[in-house]
Length: 495
Image (cartoon, rainbow, N blue to C red):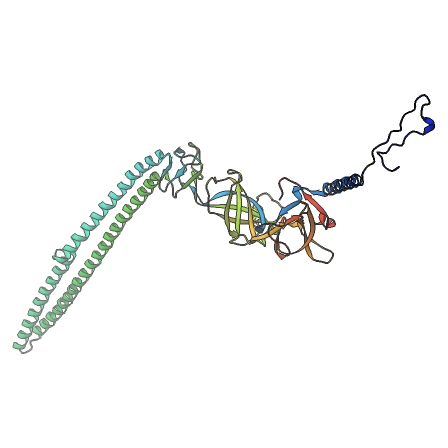
């Protein structure tokens, strides 16, 4: 009964007060059932305390798990991985037309401004043509006089030819007439000489060869020979006269053709000179050779010695950029391009590489330097032409451009930041994955991966023990030492 806490012993007899005698106080004895219930209650209380203690220890263990910042993990997803060359340039029209004139007179007016859209044939500017009009009037007077003189010369030559030809044809040519008169006279004289010779010979025969008559016959024969010679000369004179007339007619014909040619030349010279002057006057009104946008204009009043208006055909837009020597080998015609423009903010546009220079700009520049141009940078660059494709809304001619030329690409593949991947001690490419537990924490595990295309930022995952949706920690080297540990993932914006 001493162990019963409810038991209280009576005071010893020698301690009782002597003056008072009382009956000792007797407490009621506890039953066995009561004792049993008390012991069970104490045990239950102990179990509750142990449970509370264990729960507290478990919670303390969870609270002690390290936290991975939101910036150090990402959910593995599919995306595009590409190698890109970053370049800069400006938006330019596909074709640029510098509208010039060979006139050097002052510019009278310009009817367009930079930024205006113009159409083929639209008037752009006017050149002062007052001096040209004065020259045209003066030249017309002079050249018309030359044509008139040439026409008069042709008329005279034609008349001379016609008259001379008519004299030959109708027998009135004086040279031929004179030759014909001489021929008639020679014929008559020959006839007389022949008749006289015949008569003298008859008389001689009748006289029985009278010596005196014989002398007459000899004289008649001599006269007849002289007359025959004169006739032959007269006949030759006819031929000579006709030949001379033909020669003279040919000369007149040549002179006629010369006069006709001179007239043609005078007319052609006049027409060409006046036409040129008129064209010069007409060209004083400058019109657009293409549809496009005005890029630059000259000032009115200045001599028209250079481009009066510059027009860009913006039906096709291009970007001209310079690429470093180290990057040029990876760029090919047909490479896709993405770019943003300073005039449109973050809006992304697309393009295609259309031309890659095979000669460094510095080589071309050296030719200019040889001609006296200043020296440039010693780092070789190559010119690359890019044609804008797809949506062009918002792009402005001359706007600055930041472009990325895609030289290699893997589309819709799992990808990771480059520093999420590491090589473990076994030489295997791996990543650290946070695997969720039932208690709400994550266990760090190592998973092997197979990788593909990589750039300065990302690397493609082509296989291994990871899947889309896995939580991957980065950088991997930082967390590989914590493999097997439980962690929590911080809230906020992850990769």
